[in-house]
Length: 113
Length: 117
Image (tube, rainbow over all chains, first blue to last red; front, side):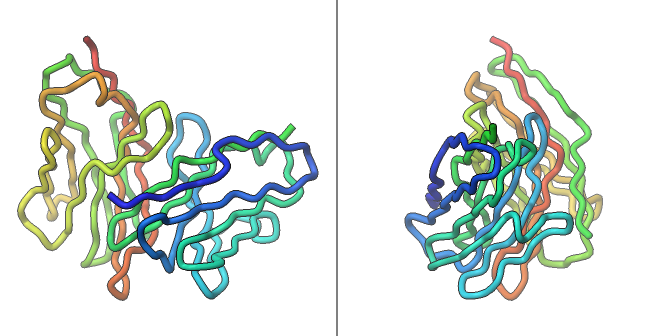
């Protein structure tokens, strides 16, 4: 299947700082990518849809000023958590659809101290 | 709005036996795909199998097969000859199709599968 990479896999940051997470489609181009958040033993919650060349679409309740998304190219989307707080600690996963199915990155564990 | 329901939070199966995970869904779309994803302890989401709604034939991938009942909006996953490596959280998911491309996935709450040696 298609390969999606995500970097970093684990990041620890101090409260008030910003963290950038990268999501890359390695062997296909993706005009759309998706960002999810997952709490332990729970399902994936869609945060936003990243669109190449246009603004991201955020789900209800997700702060667009806090979670900045930039779809810089057909193979790269970034999620920046701004002014991170401990409650932002979570597992963040991106996905990209070559066609109809979505392939997922390995995820990023964010810990805010 | 689309919904996906997995009513079995936990299931267990003896190694080499067969287990079926249940999933029901609701959508008003006529064109959609259904998926089963597996999430092992590494938390990497792995696509197990997919089903196009317009196809009547049930999808099969090696030991994994589905029972797709479109009228009943049911989409169960059967794992045959269960192996220890099958132990994981399994998510049922639904994606509608718009303008020839995939839209976002709607996930069920997941079923934690334990494989007993």
